[in-house]
Amino acid sequence: MFQSFRNQKRWLMLLAMILIIPAFVFIGINGYSRLNPDANAIAKVDGKGIQPEEFDAAKRNHIERIRVQQGGSVDSSLFDTPEANAAILYNLTTEKAINALLQHHYINISEQEAINFIKNAKAFQKDGKFSPELYQNYLAATGKSDEQFVYELRRDLA
Image 1 (cartoon, rainbow, N blue to C red):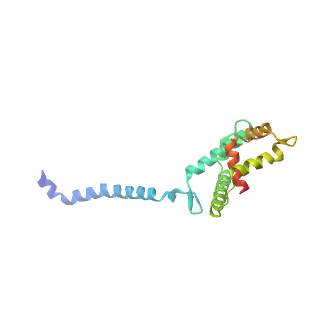
Image 2 (image 1 turned 120 degrees about the vertical axis):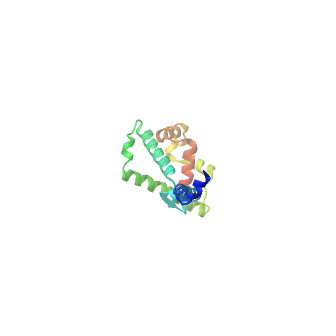
Image 3 (image 1 turned 180 degrees about the horizontal axis):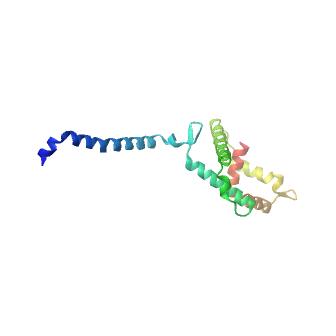
């Protein structure tokens, strides 16, 4: 039996190469993708890639925000157009660029400053005093939590 292997050495080597080389190529390409996390990035901001998963999450958040604002159901197929995707990507890249700029310049607004801003905002005052009811109604209408609104306000103020 081993004699037949010795006689057919070239054919066996060719068969082994046909089976092994594509496996190495596939593993190599797959391994390279894991080493470079930005390989699948759909956009880059400040040297960091925006992954498709992050874009999908932003799209879901956008649809959910509109659904809460409309007070009912929204047809999500309206957001499957290239124009809607471009607008969502533009908002995401703009947000990341602003955050990167704030980080590079060490600009930060404290949580207490944001809370004081909310308490002094005329939109949340009733008879010259802060009204928790007006504030809660606003949060309910926008579909945001108190922490989320304070975070966004801190970023916007910065």
